[in-house]
Length: 268
Image (tube, rainbow, N blue to C red; front, side, top):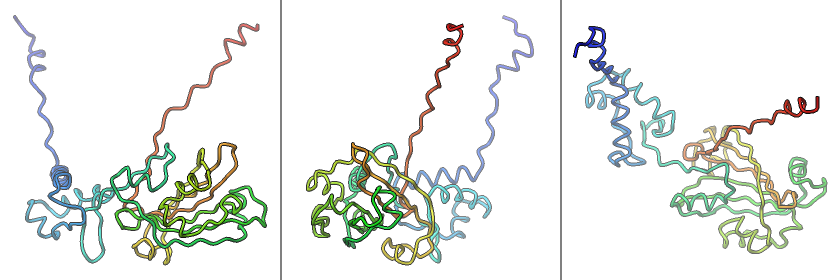
């Protein structure tokens, strides 16, 4: 069988381009982290040691570390170096779950601390969110949510006082979950919720409660929960540690808008 010269040349496999050194180093670090050789909380060796160990330049090393730091796999700790981050807590944005259930789903033991409960007149912001008159009484519930004993989330919830009579901090501490307590004691079943999330810097109090430094970035979530009747039942503000929390939203394409062209033509 005779082949044309061009065809013969075309049968030779193309040579794969060389893999950049920074990519190889990044893949090796990811392998060590996934395999447990670099455990969560462990620090990488100093830069000079890494340069000698892997035989790369400082530019190559930093290029390999940059995406791992950006995605949160590694954390830069001032004065100490670069640390392997703990696995992030992931919460799906398309499923309504209590934060306790979110932690349990990831094999973390949920807990609460620093619980404070008070009753008073609602602010304009809270009244608007809960659709209450300016002089309405609300129960204000503060607590720090923990996973395996470590602070993750500082939340303040507001609920119309008439819906939760005799609500106390002791009740919440015994239950461990606000949503469980609302369901079992007050027969309040939340039908749906709307979340709004943004980033800002932690205040001094928030930083102390969450175990971070004042000014560190945190995620803030505003949530309004409503009953099946459509009446708002809870307005909550949660300040969340951004270094260990991820909010995952699943997106689908919009449904196509039906065309009325055929209808118009039939009418004509």
